[in-house]
Image (cartoon, rainbow, N blue to C red):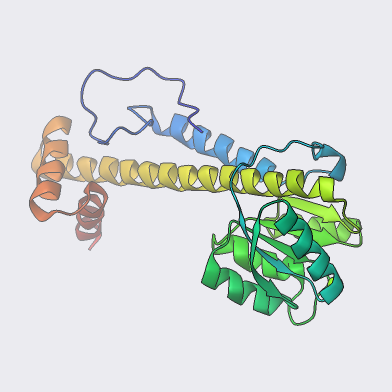
Length: 251
Ligand SMILES: [Mg+2]
């Protein structure tokens, strides 16, 4: 992913530590950057229209482990045969959404293919659980292309769907899109979480520094150094130390 911040790297080692890309950027730049990333995350949630699926873009060399779920045994059989003919492995099958979730949790496949209309739990609700838990990407199968279904799928974090009856040639590109968009989404999500943590750390350390400066008449550097030393001595993060200082001060 690596879109870095539009600031130059400082020569001095950073109090924020590690080789993070936040550098010594002011908080507002980091906050703006996080907002931009969140906007990208939102965009990543947009479902492709079926016409966006590139035809015949076969790039997967590996055998994929796939779980399939459809309440119609004939469709399941057809899907399984098609996938196996393509060299993939159908590691689990389910006739309803609840069972599909159970199997997916157990087997952690490369991709889960879910019919939308299924008993117990429908494909969209099952997809929501599977993607929220970070188990696998999901490809939805639908006999319908109604807008409300597509909208629900989007909210569930599903990145690709196929309209039944599917053509064999559509299957691989659709799987490919489901997997690549899921990976992109997970990367973005962990990057945003990471940045938000860093920003919170920085805010806490700034506040704690201010408190120490006021209380002990320290210079900023000294106050910072004190937090840093305490962090090293106690093997607690700078954020934990800073939060402790803030808490103690507020009592
Ligand atoms: Mg069905």
